[in-house]
Structure formats: structure tokens, C-alpha cells
Length: 138
Image (cartoon, rainbow, N blue to C red):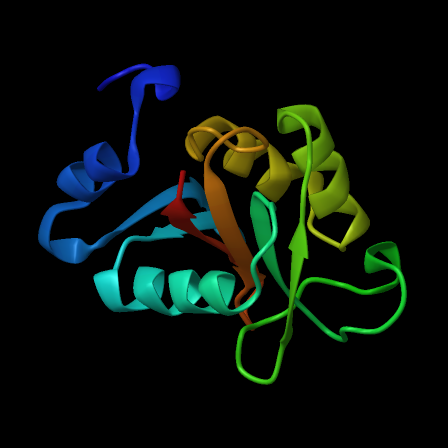
């Protein structure tokens, strides 16, 4: 396996193969990287409709007020919010402030190449508590 610094979205897609997803962690603390082209395209479409420089797209409970006043949630019915962070540490801090457990945040920082940098990642929580990350672009 390539070091995470060298991984790209294409590498992740290749690694996932026909499953079109990668999973890390155990039990309830599971990170799912969604690599389905249709899902990536949906996030890209949202990003294109809301231009501006951001490297995180977040499915939140509401779209009003400060980002820190909401929580990450599942996609259906969610308010998609954008954020710009500088580096992995800020990305981790933001995800924690949105109610994501430290264990899931650590999995995301370990397995989402470019998190908090040039890569754009979309996040939502599944109803059963898994964190889903979708690479949108770079």
C-alpha cells in the first residue's frame, strides 16, 4: 500500500475495486470511504453550485448560525455546509466540534489523503454512527 501522502482519489478507487468503498475501524467506530462515481458526482455538483474556496463539505443538521452550533448528520434532509480549514489538525478539530467521536476523527485523518489541504472531502454520519467520507476533488 502506498503511503497516505502519495495516495490520490484514483489510487483509492483502484484500491477499492468493484466494491467502490473502503472501510476502516471496527464495530461502531467505522470510517467508510465512499468511492461510487455517482456519489462523488453529487457532491461535486453541490460544490459547483456553491462556488468558493472550501476543502470540506459537511452534511449538518441545520444551515443557520455558526457551523460550531450544529452537528454532522446523515445526508437525507441535511443542510450541506462548506468549510475551509488549514491542515489536518483544523479538520480534526472541526469534525470533533460537529459531534464526531475522536476515534472516527482519527480514522479520517489517517485514511483521507489531503484532508485539510488541497483535497476536498465531504463528510456525513450514517444513522448507525459510521462516518462516511467522499473525496470530491483536489
